[in-house]
Length: 640
Image 1 (cartoon, helix red, strand yellow):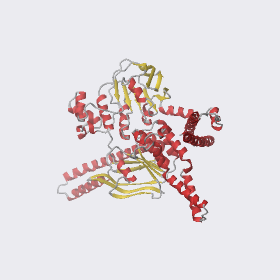
Image 2 (tube, rainbow, N blue to C red):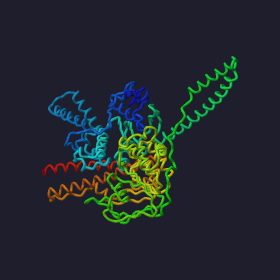
Image 3 (tube, rainbow, N blue to C red):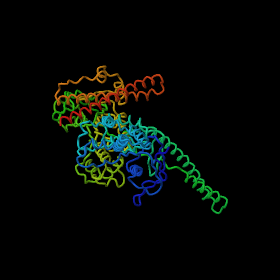
Image 4 (cartoon, rainbow, N blue to C red):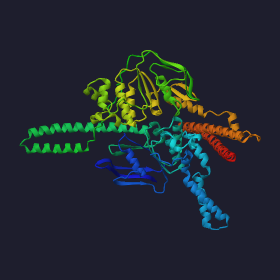
């Protein structure tokens, strides 16, 4: 069954054509990535599919009987709307069904005996159950927990949230709606690694259709099975994930270049012969006839000749590295940072050796960028100390790039900062993909990615041996990320970076600092090995006392005051929430292990049985969570 059909779609903005006769189909249940350079028109195409934009030519059909969910711009809500109110909008249909069920039940209880009414009640009750009408609160908690939306945030005013928090809340709403088709625009923005893992697991098990625009290559590899590339107003479809697309595109370009060169050789050979015949055959009909025949043949070959493959200039090995630093680049002793009563991390004992690549990772708000700023002297530590080694030549790219005078042009900024002449500046800017009229843009109109490129262009002019980056790929599309990676491939000195981009981390990190629980887990090794270690830890059986606590919760004392009873219930609820989180982590690890052992039927059966047990335990925990939530609600009402 076709869920989305696009046939000959074209789009213009005035006289400027954005899309040219785009055609593709998305079948039911497929998970598809839509990728392309910034400015290629993918957002326009996505908005045409969601109905936000009108197209000029062609046909576009989204299955009329399917429920569609869209994650794009952040919706606005009236003042005073809480996060809980926003999350509960996902249950509008279920609640309308619930009200209708109540009305029918009242009519039946009053003695109304209508077979059609009874049939409607049965159908509606079945649909209500399928849509999760009986498990709204546990489901809302499960999705919120996975996306990093704690229960205390539920009572906060939605309008007071940050942009990242709003994005997470709206993504949670979309998942709770349980639509048949999901259209997702950058769903991974503002998610930390734990939330990304949860979302990937959710979407992999989702039975509906997904079309996603994302620059997160790791996410695309783990979720999507089909890739649509938009380039030069046209689309090409690849039957695989992002890594498959990269490999297949490279093969296609190699084949295209080979055909181009072969045909060019034939054109050159025939052109040489034709030129000689034209020169020698003046007045000779036979020779001129052969010459004109060759000219026609050359034209036919040119008409069928593919374009020459043109690649962006690679920057591998272009960084200017200084003399080597000492072997000890940095060490910390008892490093602690607190804000009031909140401690981000304490007593850190860390060290960096020469030529290591350190990735600093952790949940949002854990203190990654704060740690980086302390080490750079931009933020004071609460206690402890740190010391840089000898002969350190450091360059730093912050998360948000700013310039002293953003009214200057790109060219003037480089000339002024580097003290070079305009031709030299233009050559250097061209290397960093500022070409033609781009150099005359004022800095204020540049995108975040363009500002990052300009800052790199300036700061990497000097020789360095320690490079510090804070979320370097945040504002970059996939192709710009690849460009940056090409640049860093030739850099062999010390690298320290904060990032959520797991593809980038996996490519460069040789050492992981994970900020968690007020400390740093120091792992010497690459990111893929670090993930494997976490999955092994998560798959290990939990301690027996925790299981007993779920099966046989402690009896509540009858003589507790209302306040103490409420606090006790809240502690129990927090304990159950922690057990749910642990169980879902274990299920995630088992799913990953099942993917790896898919050819080992004996091991697969064992893992499947273990997963069934974990799922059963999780269901029981959710029931317990629901019971405790109701008790807390009743106790709160009784006290008010």
